[in-house]
Amino acid sequence: MTDTLRVLQFGDSVFPVGAFSFSNGLESAVQHAAVRDKESLREFVGSVTRTAATGDGVALLVAHRAARAGDLDLVRDADEAVYLRKLNEETRTMTVRMGRKLAEAAGHIVGESLLTARMRDADAGGIAVTYPVALGVLFAALDLDEREAFAAHQYGAALMVLSAAVRLMRVDHLDTQAILFAVNETVPAMYEQVATAGLDEMQTFAPMADVLAAAHLHAHVRMFMN
Image (cartoon, rainbow, N blue to C red; front, side):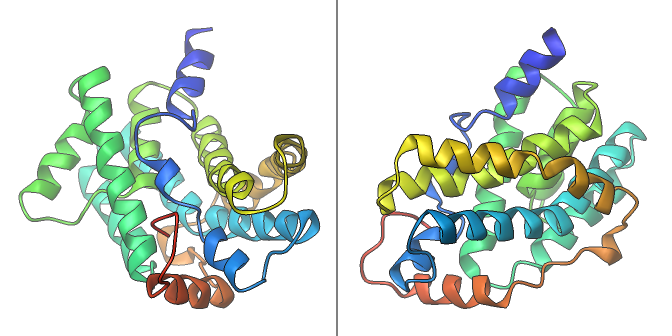
């Protein structure tokens, strides 16, 4: 039961990493009419979670295994791989800010771990801590399975969009929960797809998302930071 509760705690959407400040691209998608209704929202969430799995999800799994082996260099490589694949300023800001907040919170709650060592390394002028890598290292420190870390990451990516949707669109909580329920069913297949991938095989090709993020950067009115 303790393991289940830890997954729930650190995978919770209200865990203080600042996720509420971001829409994972939805605000710009709504502004430019790429997302208009429940059906297009479902498609958008599916796209976000697929990209999260084949990009950040791979780095999370690599970082989890590296943390289990005590390999700080490989954890650092995973952070670098995530950061370099964020093509726009807002997504880089999101992953770095949430990653640091998670590392800080974990140090306060859990205590000394490879994640706190990684944060000190970043503070010394190294590569920044990113959110998916921090989550993978934290779950390894808690002796939680990599599948649980991957599931928590995918859940968070979807919920970030859906939580923003109720503030940006004419959808209600029941609509968003139905979409979340359907998207969650795809997570096991996504895990199997990327479980054996290495950092060189990370795929983040989502040109429409990058265009929308670039447009959002210069928007005059916005509720979210990306």
